[in-house]
Image (cartoon, rainbow, N blue to C red):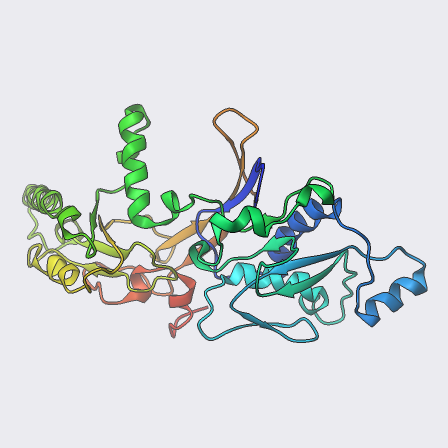
Length: 362
């Protein structure tokens, strides 16, 4: 999402970035940036002959010019954006950048796209700029120096430049910190019932083993195993069905695109879970271990799915007003759900980056 560098009153956030984006979504997001900055822009020559010529023929005013900072990509003279091999700039923001630098490239064959402004790309935030598109987790943003790097934006009409992350976002976007945030919120607001929809989760820290919640996990594992065994016995079953597998899902705190996620059944006890976590390099990122939802809501055809939704957080209202964008993204697994086979990511993980590799994709 976008947030102002100083004096922020609005931010556009995403619970999780979609890996599938069509032209309309890219156009919507860039409209936010262009509209926000247009009032502060000084009209200049576009430095693109085809644009200048078209405007001169129509006798229209010169286009305002902006600068976008975006590391991790290569931009051709024609404005075509290509992510570098190790780039961590999200696909959503790659599409936004492409829309800004070469709108005609996203308009589609046979369609004309008249630019509303001219955007120039820069890899470094040193010097004047209007929009900063950071790579994953806001890793490209030098927060402590941002006030200096943003320059005296007041001279440009009082509208500060934009960045695509909010400072402190890790408290809800890093998985381990999200667990802590929800716990604190639940303790402060017990009537909200966070535990009704957020599964029991435990943090393991290879960097600080003494802070790992091993004892709490073992207690929860044992309690769940006993509850499932009692449920199976009451139903007259053997415990081999979905209700009795006591599976747990393990995710790295900084993970994305479904990478490194592991699901482990509990038939052999908690040992396999602990062995996996203890095998992580000392000093590496924290992991979150959560109860795996073994009876998920499924689409017709028996496939798992998830939604990705965009919201606008309006801080001009006490306690924030949350406004939901009408169009979201539905992601589905390509293989019908079945219990027990936790090695098949096409069954359990609906991430587009994973499902696109399935023979049943599409």
